[in-house]
Length: 62
Image (cartoon, rainbow, N blue to C red; front, side, top):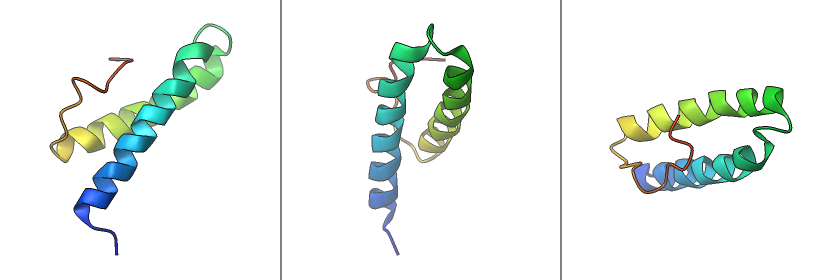
């Protein structure tokens, strides 16, 4: 069973990756962007509830 730290690490990694994918497609593929934005929000809420400070790693801020 993964530890809390491992779970947070995995979510931070996914949060960073999804932002990397979202930024270049916002104008090119808005439907895909919106789908990814939903996952971005889920990750953001989860990380915030786990006490992770998103100030430095949130590049979308939406």
